[in-house]
Image (cartoon, rainbow, N blue to C red; front, side, top):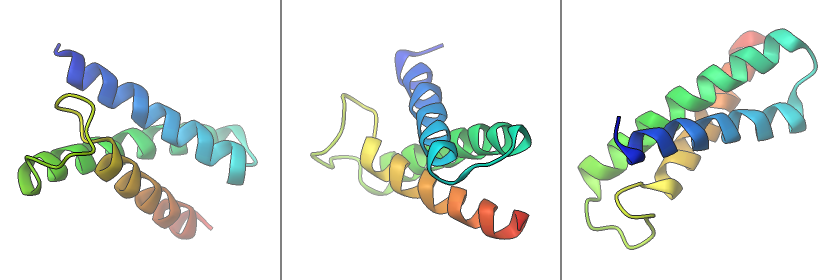
Amino acid sequence: MSIVWFLTVIFGLLCGAIYYLLRGKTPRQLFLYLLVGTVGFTAGHIAGSFFLPSFPLTLGDLHILEGAILSFGILRLAEWLNA
């Protein structure tokens, strides 16, 4: 497993945990937000590396900005669909 994918999972879990601290209420939501945050960050990283390969705001090969934006967007959508 590459360090980029390891960091992708770590940052995805971090996005999900932050969102849970801000908006979550139940343990079920914690699991949902951690999962959705990781999936969203991974999708954002992949989209960023595909569409913006030479974007200057990266951590090595990891597209943090794109991953965080898509992660929080999908987390918001998951909260809206879960309500």
